[in-house]
Structures are given as structure tokens and as C-alpha cells.
Image (cartoon, rainbow, N blue to C red; front, side):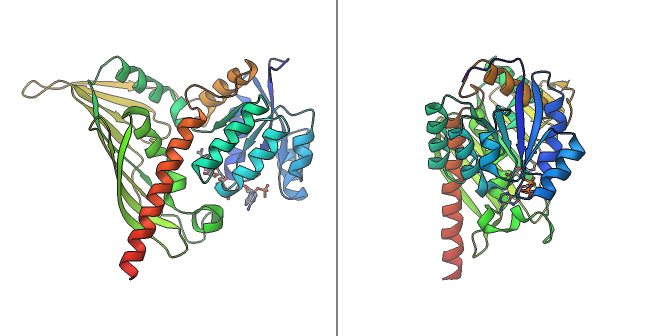
Amino acid sequence: MRMNGTKVRWAVVGSGGIGKRTVGDLRLCDNAEVVAIGSRSRASADAFAQEHQLPLAFDDHAQLCASPDIDAVYIGTPHATHFALASQALRAGKHVLCEKPLTMTADEARELGRIAAAHHVFLMEAMWMKFSPAMQKAVELVAQGAIGEPRFLQAGLGYPVPPDGPKRFWDAALGGGALYDMGVYTITLAQMFLGELAEISVTGCMRPDGVDLEEAITLRYAGGALAQLATSITCLVPPRGWLGGSRGAIDFQQPLFSPGGLTVTTGRPPAPPEVQELKFAREGAGYVPMFRAVNVAILAGATEHPLHPVSATAAVLDIMQRIQAALARERDAIAA
Ligand SMILES: NC(=O)c1ccc[n+]([C@@H]2O[C@H](COP(=O)([O-])OP(=O)(O)OC[C@H]3O[C@@H](n4cnc5c(N)ncnc54)[C@H](OP(=O)(O)O)[C@@H]3O)[C@@H](O)[C@H]2O)c1
């Protein structure tokens, strides 16, 4: 659907933590306007609309999707609700940017991709990490051969979520656990740089209800590259990582999902290494580059963004499903 205006008119769905954080960043984009909130409750919708001065407030997703005053929907609700909310919006002709993970399975992601294509509307998982200036620079440096062939990624992300913390971490029905919430970033990072996946090994801890508490993941790629990834909701795993190549390495500054800088180290011992520090300004809370790029794509009539197509999302979900299955097997073997 090619748009007539110069601004995409957004509805935010979900009046919680991430919804609040993203309104400000959407407003920093001169190709976007935030016009609506969608919530499950009238009181929350009205309170959010008042706080953020939005003209439209809905407590019914079907009504929101039917509104002619909305072009695009940003979905900021717990993981397991994404598929239903996104498919309804896409079928109603709305563009969709949905929080990570896009869906709970690769098949669901591909299904959403088919619906978006059939309705000529845009669909993307809100993988802001890929759009951050630092990550964009890292991609450029690797493409230029600055660190040679990428061979090893080590990355981690996790924090001890209190038992009374956000339900999305602890409720299996909402897609709880470390992997889908935080592991999604480190796996996406590995997929960005290491080529075709060959093998997955994992060890970790999964509760009987399917909520994974922590895991150490090794991904082996067809060309021989390795990724070693750690994630947890019971302990602090510093949000950082590095990518080693045949001629050098790139360190991603904390936080990994929106790095403020890169340290690029090149050279071989015994020569002293050459170290280059690159700093990047953060716009708003860090989502602005992604929002801006998505608005440009929507205004141009695209159904996907080349930096993060649905096929890339589905590939990561496929890996996460295989990891979950392996963790369940490990748990059951220990219990037997
Ligand atoms: N990109 C990032 O930096 C980032 C950071 C945090 C979270 N996230 C992602 O954003 C999503 C939401 O995270 P969050 O921390 O904002 O979650 P949250 O606070 O638990 O939920 C967000 C909102 O979703 C709605 N909601 C809650 N349970 C629901 C249900 N069962 N069905 C439908 N709607 C429900 C509620 O809004 P109403 O009461 O208004 O309906 C709630 O306020 C997750 O997928 C997460 O991975 C991304």
C-alpha cells in the first residue's frame, strides 16, 4: 500500500513499558505521527492517550484496525499475543512493526509475511539492534574486510528478573523465559555475521512449565565459524559481545542491543595491536534509526525492510524453537 502523505500515522498497541518508551522516539521522526493507543481496557487507553496527548484511544483491537485514521500499528504486548494482533492488523490493511520476538514459531512468522504480502502492507519485527548506527558500522567494517573473515562471536545478555517482575518473563503462556526475550538478540547478532547455520548445541535450565531460566548456546556455521551465546533471567549476563575475525576483532559496547560504540582491534602479535575507538550518538531511547527507516520503507510502498526481512526473523525463530526443544530434552533426561 503506497501512502499519500509524508508521515506515517501510528497506533501503539499495549499501554505498558515498551509502548510508553517508544512514543517519544516515534515523535522524534519527522516522517511519523503517533495518533492512537490500543489497550485491553478503556481506563488504560484513556490514561495513555491523555498522558501522551493522542487524539484516538481504543479498547478494542478490531475497532483500532478498522480506523481510517491509522496507517500503521506498533505492537508492544507480550510475545505470545503478537501473532493474533499482527495478523488482524495486516488483514485490515495496516502496516505492522511488532516487538521481538515477532511470533513464537517460524511458521507463524512466515504466515504473517504471507498475509502482509497478500495485503500489500509492511511487516517487520522491531529488531532495533540491527538499525543502530554502531551495528550498521560493524556490518560495513566486516564487509570491507576490516577484521578479515568473521570466525567467532561471543555475546551475552541477561539479568535477574525478580519473581514479581514483568509477567512476560515468568508466564509460560505469554512466552516466558530468557531465550525469547533476550536470547533473540544474541542469536540475531550471530545470524548477521556468520553465514549459514550448521549445528546447534545448548545446555541450560528449563522449568517443567517450559520457562527457560538460562542457557549456554553454541552455534556452528557451515564455514566453520562459531558463536557462543549466554542468556539468563536468574543472573546478570553483561549485555556485550565481540566478533573475532582472521585479521582483527570488533567489541560491541554495552548495551549490545543498542551499542554506544565499537572497539576495533587489528594486527597480529608480536606487533602491538592497533585499536580504534568509534563512538555513536544515541537518538532518543535508541529506537529512532529503526523507526525512521521503517517509515521510509512504508512511505515507499515496501512490504519488508531489506535490513530485517521476515525470512531473517523466521530463521532466528527456527533456531530458538530447536534450542527450546533441546532444553526440554535435557530437562526430561535429568528428571528421568
Ligand atoms: N525493544 C525493547 O527494548 C524491548 C524492551 C522491553 C520489551 N520489549 C518487548 O515488548 C513486548 C512487551 O514488553 P513489555 O515489557 O512492555 O510487556 P508488558 O509491560 O508485560 O506488557 C505490555 C502491555 O501489553 C498489554 N498486555 C499485557 N498482557 C497482555 C495479554 N495477555 N494480551 C494482550 N495484551 C497484553 C498490556 O497493555 P494493555 O493493558 O494496555 O492492554 C501491557 O501493558 C515484549 O514482546 C518484549 O519482548 C522490547
